Length: 121
Image (tube, rainbow, N blue to C red):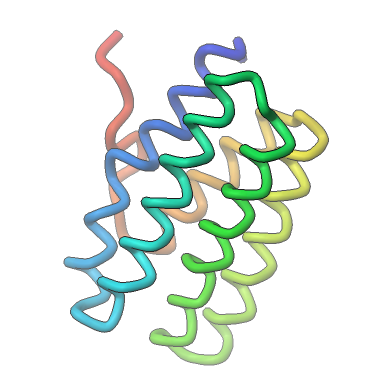
């Protein structure tokens, strides 16, 4: 997978993140909006060549999103927190395949169709 394709995976996730509010209801609005804001900040840092700052904002965003698991019960909460840790670690290693797999898992857990928000090829 090319670096450009990996960037689209993250941007595609941002494009579909608002669906979480529909799927999880009004309790999800605050965390989803906060996560989206953090992801947009991360992209700005990434585009400015500030990878460390970008990763920090991605970690904050994914922490917000993982908190949504508590709306679905203890098991889901634990799963989402574990998935968040894997995602952030993959970003830190530069492991694009792992990051994409984790993003797909987030989308799947949220009931979103695979590839939601992916660019037209």
